[in-house]
Image (cartoon, rainbow, N blue to C red):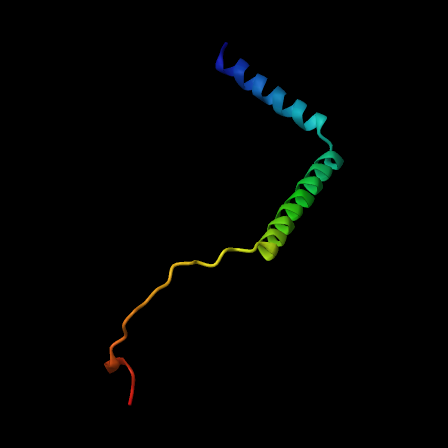
Length: 71
């Protein structure tokens, strides 16, 4: 297959894609993806708001020298 034939095939594929997709269909796909994105963000926020994260149970003791406190 020559370079010109390959180029012509690619052009035909692109044209058929644009012919088969209308702006209304593309708007619908974009709208569905946007709504899905909003549901994912909203679900993540609800999960973080309701998640009962466990408190660290390790106790820490640290000696602070007296020189760090003003008298």
